[in-house]
Image 1: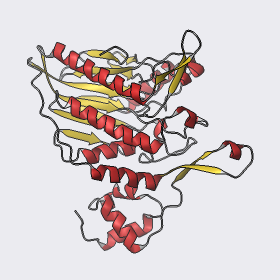
Image 2 (image 1 turned 45 degrees about the vertical axis):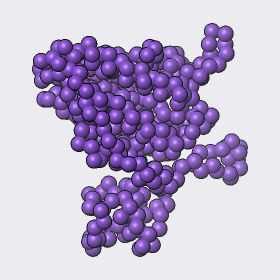
Image 3 (image 1 turned 90 degrees about the vertical axis):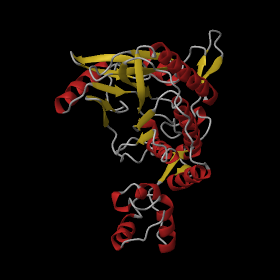
Image 4 (image 1 turned 180 degrees about the vertical axis):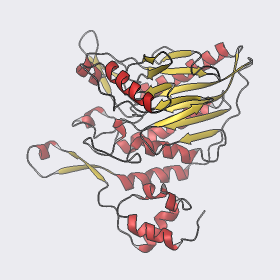
Amino acid sequence: MFHDWKKSEINFLKKNRKLFTIFQLSQKPELKRHTYKSIEKKIEIMGFKKPVIKKAHLKSNKEVNGMEEKKEIVEIEKLEKSLFKILDKKKIIKTPKAEKVFRGKKQESAVLMLSDFHCGKINYYPDEYGKSEITYNHEIAIKEMNRMLGSIKDINNLLSYGYTIKKLYIFGLGDLVDNEIIVRGQRHFVEVGVGEQLVWGVKIFSEMIMELLKTFESIEFTLIGGNHGRMTQHRELAPFYNSFDYLLGYSLQLMFKEEKRVKIITPESWFHTVKIYNWSYFLHHGNVVYSWMGFPYYGLVRQGRSRRAETDIDIECIGHFHQIMEVPISSHSITMVNGCWIKNDDFSWRQYGILSKPQQWYFGVSPKRPRTWDYKLDLLKEE
């Protein structure tokens, strides 16, 4: 729906057009009455210039050797427009009716921790004969997604006689896309560029939500940005919206905006607290936790205790380290570290000497306890 433009809104647009993309402007409170298309049309009519700092480049081999050639790999505004065109072509998703699975008396909620999906990544690892084999790609990721959904269904059937679980919380903890500019040479280990990775991600996670709605009456999906979502090759301070993970979450928001049973949350921060009953779950990707000699334990405990001195945290939920684990911070608080989707991740093996295993946390929450039951979902098990 298009609205008339107020003078204050036009002045805000004039002042900020060179600083932000159309998508970023659509997130500003000053322009909250206007849609992406409305802002795009107004910019076209008024003849505003594009931002001058929204391109990322990847140095080619020739450039490294002293030549001036640059390979442009992503222009943010073009990427935004292509995504919105794709979403505009789709009809509003019609969610399925929830099946009657739970018959128990105990009322609880469920939590699925989802992180380090690295959509678009190709991973190689040598077999026992020294021959390199693919242990992760788009096809394998889809198989693992089906295994995860099948495992959740089996667990729900086991719990069905004792529990009634109406709501599922999904903690999206970052690195859902792999990107292509995080390290030099990364382009050799991805199937497609980051734009196509976003399209794949929107399709996979929207279908995941649809499947889960067959069991749960409602779903709340919170998406936090990870380090692989950044829009620059080098590490630097960046606002929360300069993240491909954030753009993925916003795309899902658009897809499910008319569905009352689905709530997609894209926090305006790299950190976020989710309240379930009276319990506090502190979410972030985990890349700000420093390791010592390759072990994150000391960083997790040190930061965990400092944060808990500042704010109430019952359970801290992070990803990043590609290893599923639980770290006690005190007698009444823990940090749950999620696993990844990549079998024998080459980077983890070379950097830390660790072979990753595809696993994700799935646990229950009651009004009396922040965690009642938990399962490590093994994504390698056969369906």
